[in-house]
Every structure is written in C-alpha cells, then in structure tokens.
Amino acid sequence: MLKDPTAAGDEMIKALAASYDFSLAAVRRLAELYPLRVGGIIASLKTPAKRYFLRVNTLKATPAEVVEELRSRGFEAYVHGVLPDAIYLPVRGPFSVRRLEKIVVAKKEAAESVYQGAHLYAPGVLKAEGVREGERVSIVSPRGHVVAEGIALMDGEEMVSRRHGLAVEVEVSTFKVPSVRELDVYKRGLVYDQSLPAIAAGHALNPRPGQLIVDMCAAPGGKATHVAQLMRGEGRVVAVDRSEGKVRKIEENAKRLGLSNVEVRVADSRYIDLEMEDLAGADAVILDPPCSALGVRPNLYYERDEEEFRALSDYQRQFLKAAAQLLRRGGLLLYSTCTLTLEENELNVLWAARELGLKPKELAPFLGSTGFTEVGPRVQRFEPDAHDTPGFFISILEKI
Ligand code: SAH
Image (cartoon, rainbow, N blue to C red; front, side):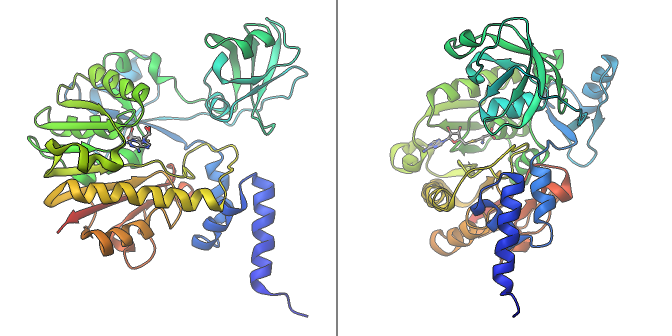
C-alpha cells in the first residue's frame, strides 16, 4: 500500500524536530513555508551568522572611519556597501570544544552567548555540581549541548547562589564573535550592535527630521536610536517599553550615542492610544513586538508550542490596533519581527489591512526575499540559509 504523503511529511517533521531539538510546532511551520529548505534553515538557526553587523552612528563618524579604526586595532572589518551605515566583522569558527568531566550548565540565553565567545556570569548559571574554583570545565546548555570550555573562577555552590560576578572565564568557544562592547568605538558611541535586517528596517521607514515617531516596544532601543539618528537629532522619538529596567537601557544607549531627541516612557503600549493623548497624530510608529523569536541566531534548541505561537499572534494584533489609532492619516507603521511564522508576519499584515485600514507599501531597501500570500511582494523576509542573517520580517503600512 502507498503511504499517505501527508503522513510521510509528518514523519519527516518529527525526525527533524528530534534531530535538531526544535519543537514540532516550529518545524511544522517552517516545513509548510519552506518544504525543501527546512533542514538547512534550522541548521542555520542553530549557528550565528557569519558576519557580525554594527550600525555606525553617522552623527559622529562615517562607516569608512570606523572600519579604519577597527583595522588599526587589529580587527578585520568591512563597510557593507548597500546600507549607508552598516559595517561588519567576520565571525570565526566553528572550533571544537570537549565535554570534560566537570560541567557547568548555563541557562539557554547565557549558553547561546557563551557559544559565541562571551564569558559566563553567575546569573547565567543553572547548575555546577562539584565544580571547584580554578578547575577547567565544559559549559553546556540545559539540553546538554557543549558550547565552550573555560576556567571556573568560583566554586559551583557560589555560582548558583551569587547574583553577580564572572563565574567561568571562557577559553575556547564554538564560535567567536568580536566582543564589541569592550571596544573604544563602542564606548565612544560610534557604533550600535544591530543585525543587518534590523538596520534595513530603520531605513525602510525613511524617517525625516522634525517628525514625531513613537516606538511601542522600544527596549533596548536599537530601532528607536536608529530613527533618531536618521532624523539628525531633530524632532521627537518617543520610546515606550513595559519594562522599567529595560527602559533604562534605552536611556543609556541614547546617551552613549549622543542623541538628545529620544524620550523614554514606561507603559503597556497596547493602550497607548487611550493613555497618551500627546502622541496622537504621530508621523510614524515602530512596532517590533514580542514574537516567537524563531529567527534569532543562534537558537541552540527551540521549545515554543502551538499554543504559544497562537497567543503571540493575538498579542501582536492588540499592538497593531493601538498603532493604527496613533498614526495620522498618511502616517507610516514599521511592523517587524525576528521570526519566520506566517501568523505573526503576513497574516498579521493582512489582518491589519482588512481590519485597521493600514495599507502595505513597497519596501526599500530590499535585501531579503518577498513573502507569502497576496501581500508577499510588499513585505520582506530575511531567511537565515539564503541571506546569512537572522530570520526577520519587515513591512511598512500606511494609514489611509
Ligand atoms: N525594538 C527593539 C526590540 C524590542 S523587543 C529594538 O530594536 O531594540 C520587544 C520589547 O517589547 C521588549 O523590550 C519588551 O519589554 C517589550 N514589551 C512587551 N510587552 C509590552 C507591552 N505590553 N507594552 C510595551 N512594551 C512591551
């Protein structure tokens, strides 16, 4: 008897999910959109992109100047060439790391940073049984992926009980991303670490000096500071985030970059149209809401299930509603996500077009791929296997 082809598809999905340690719900979504590429896409998602991007603060320096300074300090660095303010540094690796007898288990996000060469700090440690200060240890993810080797700088008990301090100094990591925050060009506010698609998103909005722009989910301020920079410090960028602690990060970043036209507010921006009358009639709104982050690289493993994907897409629609209310007629909404699912991207854009009177506009710059559904040609997807970037989605919607 012939096998049911959908059942065969399901077997493949299960096999991929098991071998890559990605949830069935995630693999199903990717397989539906990219039936022939799903394995390659997940393999890319598990590693960092080969180029590490920085946005140059063009109010303080040109990309060529920053590249020259980085080279003079021994770094390999390049001007992007299409985006007027993007530069990149190559990521090195993979290097082989061993599973040693002594193991420190890091939380998922900490393990993903260590995998790329960061040191491990105490708040990122989940478990470190029997580890003594001075010993050589392997750092593993909560699911057992070995990400790096290093030297324990405290006893295991101390690692899990202390809330601060360097726990393991990493000596060999799987990948090595340049540690930009220690660089002089970073401290002087000449650069902001931001991915290529995120930089492209800021340009797609094409902000103008003097405008009022509201960023509804702004922390740590990547897009908000970018548009403030593109406005040449003139006009107002109101950067809103629900988290008080994260809002401080926006302030720090704006200060470091020397931007005086960024104002921060702590609020639940789903109700911003009702609560902040002074923002009515905004020229542009940025909405980069919480998403399933399936496009984030590296994702060592991925756990979100059906229910979480659905809930996120509903949550995003609440923000879209408020965004449509804030905008003036003719005003533009930048809607972006760092994920690849249809329901958080194209289906939300189609919903906003149908329900909220927002019209998808053509995008420039265009460095990714067109999307799916009838709105496909007017949205932009970045695909990790094809573009050497995180998975990302950009759309610009005009209020009519
Ligand atoms: N746009 C940012 C990244 C945003 S990540 C950048 O380019 O740097 C999503 C942010 O949404 C998080 O900082 C989170 O704190 C915030 N957020 C989540 N729910 C929110 C809500 N209801 N109101 C406002 N902000 C919210």
